[in-house]
Amino acid sequence: MADPKIVPEGTRLALTQSELDTLKILKDAGDRGGFYMAYYGMTGNSEVLLTAKIATFSEATGGVAFAANRLLLDDFTTGPLAPGSSKVFQGIYCISQGVADFTYQTVAKDLDPNYAPAQGTPAIPSRTADSSRDGLTSQNQLYVAAFDKWRSVDNGTLFPGNFLTAQSGLAQWLQGRDYTHPDVTATQAGASTGFVYSAKATLYASYFGKQQSEMSASTVVAGPDGYNLTVAADGKVDGVFGNTQSDILATVAALAAQARTAFGPTGTADGRALLDIGGFAAFGSDWTTVRTVWAAEVPVVEAKVRQILGLGATDPITESALAAFRKGLYEGGPNSGGDAGRITNERLLRLPELVRTNGVSRATIYR
Image (cartoon, rainbow, N blue to C red; front, side, top):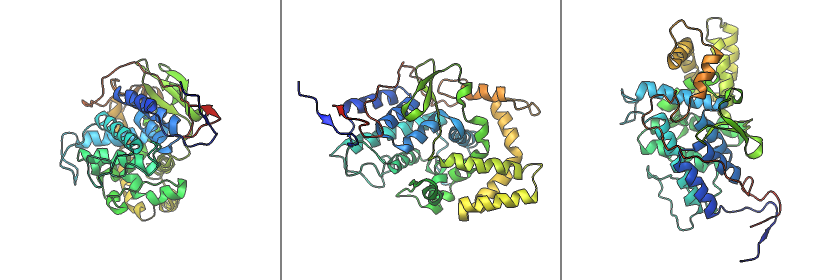
């Protein structure tokens, strides 16, 4: 047996085959929350943390993600087709698992010294590997992988992340994040169906984002960097909770909450003027589009929420009804949205013990 090697603190550590195998086990079991949080623990990649919240519909970011996908599910599953798409929406969980597949491919290819990226091929992530070939992907690599999965099933124009590509300047200014795509301009993204539906979805964030306090049926475990995870009875991570500083969707959702008042029955001209100031500062030239979408959607938000919850037209929207609905948002859960493509593998899995933090050794360790 070889002597253990001392690795100084701060050393950039390539993923091991064992770690890659662990990611594949979690991904193949349909435990996307566990998959993303395990990779976050290994690398500290902020995009995968954001994706973990999206995949588990957690907090404001997860509320936006669920609403965008549910609105798309309602409008484009059986027709009509969205402009620029030759296929119906492929389903919330079906695409979400596909994004996890593409994320795993991106990590594996970033670790493969022989991989040669095929630029512009829809079925292969087009910004997959960097020169380091250590499996420690960039934030942008994972974002591009997510878009490329949607594009591979001809749902690229529906991709809710088009909202971020159109607003990549805002994302850079707020958090230094890169939501550009090599094949899609900000203008193209801003004209897409996905942009419009994400703008709508920000109005629903407070209704549909899971909260840790209501996850009583799940087991709370401590995750990397102080984040709390909830684990369902089937062993899958079904919630990710904690402050995500690099969370542009939560920032926009806060502005959307102001819009619900400004365009609601008690809204005033002064309130809308204040919203215009904040909206233009946030969205620039896209503010006109976002404002138009919000103004049209606000009057129907509560009716849509009642429809999704299965309530009558005049039934009150209560926190207990919302909490019960949110807890059922996972594959196989009662509120999976009728998505026939959901994952059914129920293998019992837990997050692995991690020997790294944020892609580097936290202290002098043996490997």
